[in-house]
Length: 279
Image 1 (cartoon, rainbow, N blue to C red):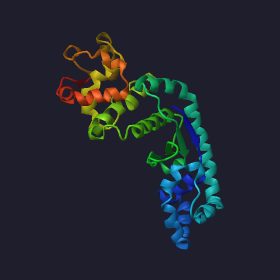
Image 2 (spheres, rainbow, N blue to C red; image 1 turned 90 degrees about the vertical axis):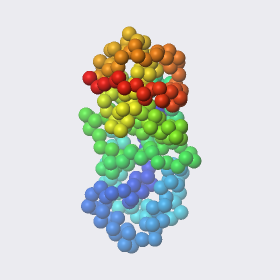
Image 3 (cartoon, one colour; image 1 turned 45 degrees about the horizontal axis):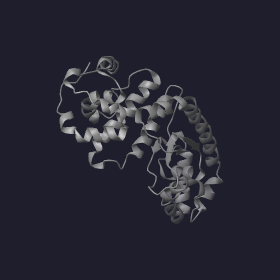
Image 4 (cartoon, one colour; image 1 turned 180 degrees about the vertical axis):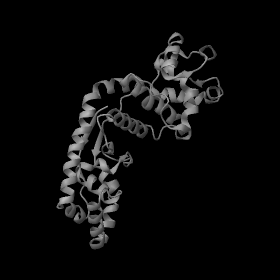
């Protein structure tokens, strides 16, 4: 997975204008622009998809609002802090990307497309993957606070959002199964391997039951044999009776999309099993 972290003026300005105001000075500036340039402000709102379609080469039809923002002291201060934030998240990625890429490839057995991470102010508190489908580059808008203690959490959340975007059109009629498997892969197994501490009881609560039903087969997909499953169960605090599950030895040769297909084909059989418990 190749991630490129950039600060783009148009992306940053658009989010400062149309997300919640990050401070009183920005709020007053937005009000002033709205009062004096209402037509241009409304026109600028429509630019989001155009910007994200090709951020590097975007040229607005009307650049009045952008030009005014670029000349303000308020924007200068935020741009500087955003550049600093960009360097912070870039360092987190650089420090972990070799191991992270190895783990992600090992879990998914897929090559993930490169992504451009469009960094905005961390005060905006956003992680947005809603770029248009005909975009020339794959983009994520990132503006989440991070500390030395939460760097891994941000990295996991970013990778998770990317994988959800990658699979958003896959088996849409079985959305819950797709989301459960992505959680097992990225919110659970990925940070578990990255930190050496189990994260298998984290994720969306409404998916917990389904994930627990899939879990024995997920271990087979990861390559655990019957003798190894006990250590995984102890690690993740999820118990099941190994002998009640037919061992699907071919799963360890599949990629994550094949595994999703397996779960869909066998969902009636998989979800009928009720012997799992949290220990």
